[in-house]
Amino acid sequence: VASGGTARALSMHRTGTFFVEANAQRSNLANLRRENQHFTELYQRNKPLCFSAAAYQKTHPAKAQRGRKDADVTLQTPSVIGVADGVSQIEDFGIDASRLPKELLGRCKALAEQQLLPGSPDGAYLGPMPLVRQAYQETSPTLGSTTLALSVLDNGTRIHGKLHPMIAVISVGDCGLLVLRRLSGEDSRLTPVFETEMQRIGGNVGAPLQLARVDARIDANFHDGITVEVIEKGSSVHCVSAYEGDIVVMGSDGVFDNLFTSEIADIVNGVLSPGSSYPAEQSKISFIARQIVEASHLKTRPQHDGHMRDAPIGPGGKADDTACVVAEVVDLESSGDEHSPTSDQSPGP
Image: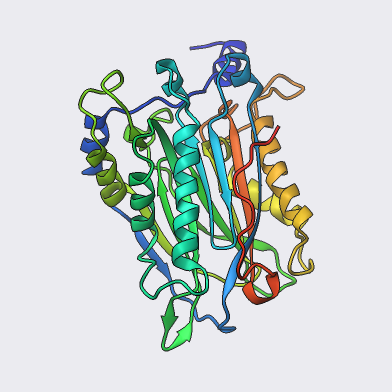
């Protein structure tokens, strides 16, 4: 049994995601099922919605000291938001770990603009899974490996003839998403109503399901069809009703390994307290994203008494690069974003 000091030191080095070979990913698909979850509450306002989003990311000092590049990437537009976490181990083979996640989210953005913005052809958007599959195929021949969470605000759904905006979510691996909502009016707290689950092989925090493209130096058995199979059979897909004022928090595993859902909710409510004005100022959304990242990193540092703070994966959490996107669901017509998406990914300090 490790001593207190040794245990604390070990907890500080829970870092790194490792490339998972093709055969391991494929065999694991048999134990995963694509989850399709629908929340079909009655939507009363019947008007199109969009995201008002901001992001923040930060390289963990422990990782920077080892010379690892920050391979987290974020995406924020009115119609789609996302987080991709590149696998740093890929750098050992001379591959830029951030390139595939950047290109993947870039293609997701371009496809979302083609399929979801006003004037798009009917039937162009077929759901988040086909969108991600096409985006991955269009990144060829770029090498790399990444986890992904993507959220699409779909204004094309109708129930009983009435517009019913939905948040469509797809996740592969251990990036996550949390939706918070005021369930008892504008004077109530924002309460978690939906959260994705991490997809990890054998429950190993270092072995998430991944979207990859590698050559024989890394895995002689790999081919693109394996990743297409991961997207089609292993991805987790959900559809959640969208309401004005909903808050969507997306993050890399550096967020959800280190912070409990209740802690994220407390951070959000600390800024957007009951009775706060709607829509929220963009500066407040940005501040929430930064607070979540800073709180995630704080978990990996000892308290004044030397003890480590509790975290979902155990005391001290995981020292990791951390990226977070926070979005408020707002009225599309009054947002000024009907025709032009906001900026996408940008690294933080």
